Structures are given as structure tokens and as C-alpha cells.
Image 1 (cartoon, rainbow, N blue to C red):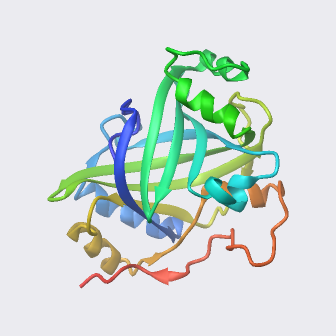
Image 2: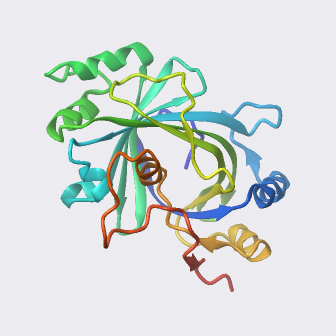
Image 3: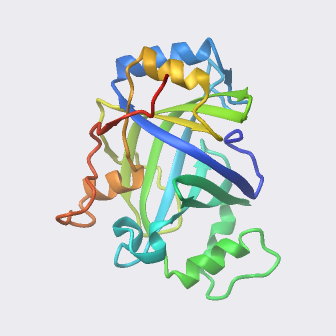
Length: 253
């Protein structure tokens, strides 16, 4: 919920809902948000609310995270970088009862080599991540990058955040290092809108949903990338990995 480069290790549980919109509608929502929410304090760009995100997503040899098997269903592990910074974040995104929490630690880019060690080093900020990396037998699977516009505000229930992610690209990787390649463009005609908040849906977001007739869409960037790259075959009975609108937002009255 806090700005993109907040280095706090623990983030409280929050709700996150997603939508898919066309680039034209995304531009309108961006302008709408710029008139009502503040820019992310750590963002750059001319408007002061944009930045590039690149993440390395981890999974097992049998893609247990992708297939949501057992305890792998609740959490994702990734290494995230903002722009071309030499600081990177080791992250675990945990979902429980529809709410999301994040744990993250900041390290220097060169410290990624520590994850190649067979024994985690106590005292290293990434110790907790390294332990899980080894215990779950994780490996880098793909790199996902995109440009994000982020606006924030404070509601009566705490901070709220609106982000628009576009130019989503992915490429397969097998090393814990960021590739300069852009990769495959995913869904060029759609932009991912995410709303983050605590407790109930804020009034401001209710107004947004009503004004733009938004439909909630359960979309995972990781699942979309893995499928588009052909890393695993889609299985019958599994939740669709294409990003199509599926249901209306919770009541806005």
C-alpha cells in the first residue's frame, strides 16, 4: 500500500481488485486519478507518477505456483527492480482469505549471487527469502516488465492506491539476473488497473467504478506470462489465464 520503494519488511493485509481497460479508457482514468489522488512519492516521469517495474518470478520445476498446488497456492516469490536501480527487492506476496500481504527486503543487485549458495547466511537481509527459496526448491522462470502509473491518497480507513500497468512484456529466464531484453508483448490492447485499499471499498473508488462502468477481472501477470510464453500447457478445468472480463465490481451503492 505504501509507495513503490518503501523498504518496510512487513505490509499489512489489504484488498486488491483488478480490472482490464482499453488504452483509451486507461488514459481517461489516469487523468481522472491525477485530479483526485497524489502521485506516488517515489515515482519519476514528467507527471511524477510513473516508473518501470521488472520482476523475476520464481516457481518449482513442476510449476507448482502456476498450478496452485498445496501451499504454493497462497504465495508468490519474486525479485523486483524499479527502473535501473542497483537496489532490488526480495518479495513474498501472500494471499489469505482474499486479502494480500507482502514481505520484502532490499538488497544490492550484486547480492543476488547469495541465492546461489546452498546455505543461507544469517544476518543477511535476504536470509528469510533464501531459506524459503531453498526449502521450496524454487528457480527463476520468467521476467515480467511493464510501465506503471501510480496515484495514492488517504481515506478514512487508511491509505488507498490506484495503479495502471501497460506495455506488459515477458521473457523466459533461467538465471537470477535481469535481462536487458524486452521480451514478448502481452495483450497490447489492454491495460491492467489495480485498486488497493483496506476495509471496505473507498467512496472514491466506488465513484470511479460507476463512472467508467468497470468490471472486476481476476488477472495474474505471472499466469498470463507463463501461458503466453508456452512454458506449461494449459490444462482442462484450470482457471483461464487469458485476461477477459468476468464479473461486476462489488455493489457501489
